[in-house]
Amino acid sequence: MSENITPEEIIKKGTLVFEKTKLMTDAHLSYCPGCGHGVAHRITMEVLEEMGVGDQAIGIAPVGCSVLAYDFMNIDMQQAAHGRAPAVATGIKRLYPEKYVFTYQGDGDLAAIGTNETIHACNRGENIVIIFVNNGIYGMTGGQMAPTTLEGMVSSTSPYGRDLGMTGHPIKITEMLAMLPGVCYATRHAVHKPGLVRKTKKAIKKAFENQRDKKGTSIIEIVSNCNSGWKMTPVKSNEWLEENMLPVFPLGDIKG
Amino acid sequence: MAKIKGAIVVDTERCKGCNLCVVACPTDVIALNKLVNGKGFNPAFPENHGACIACMSCSLVCPDMCITVYRYKPQKETV
Ligand SMILES: Cc1ncc(C[n+]2csc(CCOP(=O)(O)OP(=O)(O)O)c2C)c(N)n1
Ligand code: SF4
Ligand code: SF4
Ligand code: SF4
Image (cartoon, rainbow over all chains, first blue to last red; front, side, top):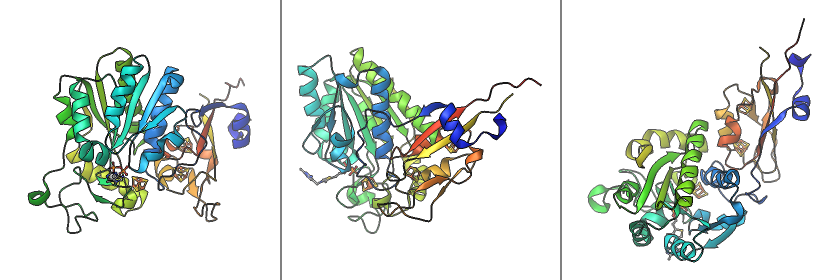
């Protein structure tokens, strides 16, 4: 009787509806348990696989926890010096205009040391995709304050909480970039809930389609967690993200 | 209408016991094992497997790509 079908029979007779994309290698990710980087990697690769362009894609890995993205993304990859990914992507895209070129960057990489490269690549309207994972902290180096760190948020370099008078405001760099005419698409998403993962994936797809159609720079910000840096469990960090990050970094399209 | 049934396979050695799939599952299928894997994490497993509806919520939020999902739609049975 079908009502009593066992899980083993479902696996044998049923349809496979989800498995790890082949565009992710079999390497175990170096990220902390529950870190959003893993989902951000996976859905980026799923989009390239679904578009059938994995063999035409070139990714630029940053400095930060995702420095090893080239070990995990099963496509052509180039690692860039800290913050320089948009400049490296510019060179690669101009040499290979038919390739799908994207950077993958953290907030320290994109909005601190790499501010210059980010702004000017966007201002030139380089025909690239920027995947920007904003976890409000420098994860890799042990949880220092980033330009995106929230007011009052404790980090190893703001042990009493970020003081806006001394260190300025959490920078909304995606909104700033959206003002540049070279940017065709700027949008902010998150990956801590199933529905949000689906939406983020759609946005990444749109970004690569923009590149195919030569529309200019697309930037996808993903508000993510850093449970190690924030010193919380993965589940707690996602709740904290929802309550504290999203009011400052609201989700949705900013341009395009 | 025959109900859609699902089943999952967890790659226990990839799993980091983060608990995100447990929280994401709408039908409380998944729990963490008390025993640890080779990395020292308590891996996820389908404790209440019969309740799975193949919604893929667990696999969508799993950062480590541990979960494979299968869907089965029973054929309409004639009396
Ligand atoms: C030129 C240079 N300056 C500083 C560092 C140290 N450093 C490594 S990663 C990092 C910050 C990374 O933070 P983020 O980009 O937010 O990525 P996350 O690790 O949080 O994913 C810094 C400052 C470096 N590697 N190179
Ligand atoms: S330190 Fe933070 S950003 Fe880095 S892998 Fe761990 S949770 Fe992720
Ligand atoms: S597929 Fe859906 S119902 Fe089945 S275990 Fe995963 S989250 Fe739960
Ligand atoms: S979400 Fe993935 S890594 Fe986390 S407990 Fe579930 S199966 Fe394991």
